[in-house]
Image (cartoon, rainbow, N blue to C red; front, side):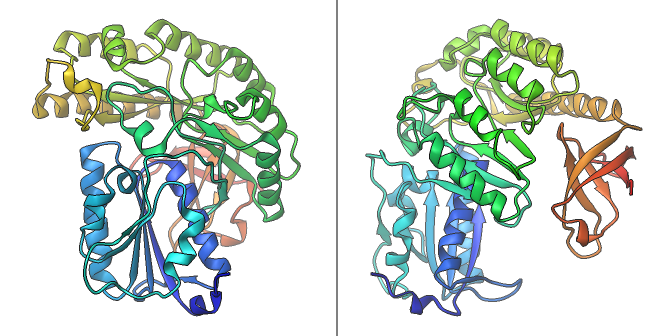
Length: 439
């Protein structure tokens, strides 16, 4: 039995890098600490506990994690520092050696956090306590909102795909999930807490059901029936797992939004084979076509990696032409980063850093064109927007059903409220449309 009195009047700060799944899990850690009596430190206040949730998808991500740890240790010199997430799982020894780190928390050991924080005392010498193991089998549920209006529901973890460039299966373990019944219960709890929108997160969410004999489509149907939740969004889902059945269901669903995020990674079939992806460009194009047939105004975000080993100039031009012709809304562009232990390192052709940068800039410019054209088509329309409270005197923001970012005048009484907004022109930096709330 943990004595939680030691946590009373203690403060904590949280720093998250990486994907929506990490934000969900950080929120869960925050909830564990809040229930023990720990409050979030105010701006400028020295914290007693620092939690850093790390990413390791690229070498740059590793570097940002180290920088974040050093920065927080400097800002909160007497804090008990906990590092978790993919970087901590993949390289626990390296993280443990960073000055100021007290605990390197394994991927599925967040429930044990309180026992490691029990004395809240810094180690005087030696490496941090390390709890990470290579045998990751359990599934830790998570549904939390953190500082945002939206809740993040972790429905699945791990991956069995082992793409040639990726270390995530080593960081997250094999694919696994909780039951539909447990997901429904967490969504109901989110509704009871006032939640109106839930984002379904995981490493490979379309793989849901492997450990319970259920399917992702079963889960979507069950969640759609929960009263109080007005919006669901499906985070990144593999194109080969995004079935026409799911697309059709979303098109007439009560609460699943016309918003998809589908990783493409390359628009060249030869490169997709080198990546060991489980689809080709024809299948990807058919999924985009299907979505647009039944939901013409759907937002489609796409992940793309540039400069992977084997991506010749000719292959990149093929990919660029393919992506340019897709009716998608936004590109999330990543430069390939070599990861130790991956099969991609056996591929001979290497793209220079300068060429990676040029290719990335071309795709980012294409993304801006596509996003702004999508937004422009909706100017003048009236759409429902879920608003989030603003900071200070800054405008409020929110998203339409199809994920158009909208900016309105500040009125924090409208926080977490769905309101009708007439969409106007772009704001100054073209990151949102200015809107007028209709009473």
